[in-house]
Image (cartoon, each protein chain N blue to C red):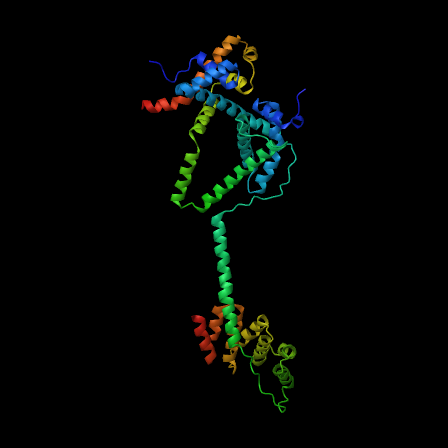
Amino acid sequence: MRKSIHALSQTELIDALKMNNSYILKQFYTLHYKKVEALVLKNSGSTEQAKDVYQDAFITVWTHVKNDKFVPKNDTALQGYLYSIAKNKWTDILRSKAYKNSNVLNETTLTEIKDNKESTTNEQELKLKAAMAAFKNLDQPCKQLLSDFYFEKKSLKDIAQSFKIEENTARNKKYRCMQKLRNMVIAPKKERIGR
Amino acid sequence: MEDKEYISKELFEIIERYIKGNMTLKELQDINQLIELDTDFKQKVEEVKTYIHGIETQALKEKLDDFHEATKNQPNVAQKSNLIFLNFKRIAIAAAFIIGLGSIWYFSIPQNEKLYAKYYKNDPGLPTTMSSTNNFEFYSAMVKYKHGEYKSAIQSWNALVAKTPENDTLNYFIGVAHLANKNVDSAIPFLERTVQSKKDFPLINDANYYLGLAYLKEGNTELAKQFLSKSNNDLSKELILKLSD
């Protein structure tokens, strides 16, 4: 039987998130959403904005867990972490909104904000965004295979079975799909050079 | 010439195993050494890492809307605290506004109060002689007024003015009695009635003067000046000059 999120220790929860355990991810998601929604609604936001902010925060927390950026200090640390990241993100949105509204005509401050944003969005983030966009637009069989292997962490044997192919064929297919993805990421660059 | 960006299937699978942590200690040591020595290889490792991370992140992102469906049947949570933002620009505007209001209060009202205190003097009232009995009630109230029993005087005059609301003398004295009783709000309507009278009223200059003073005390400098200018007594002219400074 699968263990519920409530029965997990903080380390077990982190391990489950690292392994992309969909069952636990879903519970972790649903367990804390309403609190963030209430916060956003109470502070001049809509349910749609609450959802966006929460999903953004959820991805951030998951990434931090994966990169060992987050080390739990107590049994509810991760829950609190998710809430505080969502809260900070919403605060930032409200601030920038207020800032924009009060400085509409001030060209210099607007360019300053733009410049700051560009410098903080580092190269690594842009590369990640490009990879995400490429995967999003990948053809369905490739998408399914790569998702099964890298996200669901299924074995090549299981994947081969579900695709009704040989394991070795699945391995080759995976490599070719990665090449496709890579080409999609670097294609815009080549196009630019060619011009 | 070797394509610098090309990753062979074999190399790709080695890098993949390294990222997934499926390596023997010996292999791991070799790879780590290679990463240190070969920047080109290091770049390739980073590249594959980014692709895998991108796939995972996007795959999770695409699942979130599914997850979200499950939150729709959940009960809402009450949120206690509001977020408080320190928006310095707004605070500055608010502070300026408060300081502005404060200044108006500090500089304008006390100034008016001071001028009022300086220029206000009770109307001495009309002379009362025992012989004038045809207006007994009026004069008996005037005696009370002169003795500082303003409330009682106002009561008596009010009874008379109810019968003759157009009586300028009554309206005027009720007005100044209210002023003497430090009740500016009640004084103003009676004095207004007095100055609006179309008849020749011997105390019209004083009526305008007191009405001007009443508005000054109220903090309405504009109306104060307007009525003071209709009065030709010296104090009015002096006060208008001070208000125009």
